[in-house]
Image 1 (tube, rainbow, N blue to C red):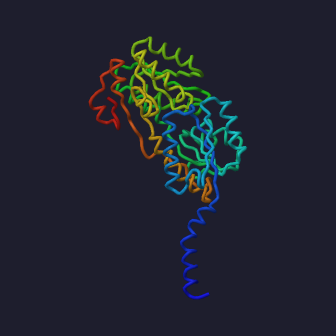
Image 2: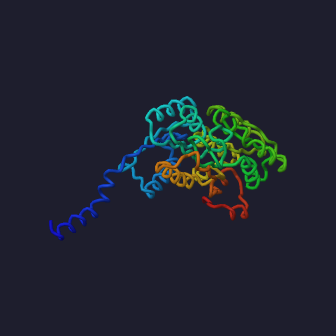
Length: 329
């Protein structure tokens, strides 16, 4: 073989090798257990943010990544069944999008790595040992601190000063700490603001309606919707009844205000999903969840819907609007 032939062969190998490596890259499989109603538009946007960031990190669906989706809603029995179904597939990693799914995955699995996102109190829920050193097979991103109960009520009182009696609504079966996680800060803020605090525990849509009608029948009522997968799934009903009953309400979701609610204040969930892709990438490349600290939100959003305010006869202070990240006309 002459020198020219050798150079040609070496050059050809150099050109072809990246494609050979890409073709031989193993397909990795992840499962996503979603604590939301199937095809929920806001959740779809969050999942899109996750996939886009994974693609930027080198993980492309259909090339070197496959994703198994399971939409669990907020039904505990459904969550249990789908958690076990995903675990039985033995994926390389599972993403959990709310606290109840993460809890059920943790109960049935101690080996498959898990990245949770939009989980409120992972230590209290028994998912991890500490935020700094999770231990075990789970890590991820929290969405809210316990002080948020008071912050929601403070914002509600600012936008609707006439509120004298405020209910915080949650499902004890799905809310953080059975509903108790946000209550101390909510009640402390109520005492400071001169507002009567009410605990509205609900377990189905009929109970949501009864509690809201009762609250709306008395003057000075207001509503705080707790961050809770059941309430998130049923937020459409809460938004509709709030308008019908002319009841000022604040939601733990910026998207709720975009969907017709008065006021939303929460972490930027799409940003959390995008950031969670970084942990998925690191774990698929060999890092251990036990050594990846749980992270807090980097962005929060305050969204005000002026159309909703007008519908319930509320004039939003200009100073309040100036603080909003988004105002919907």
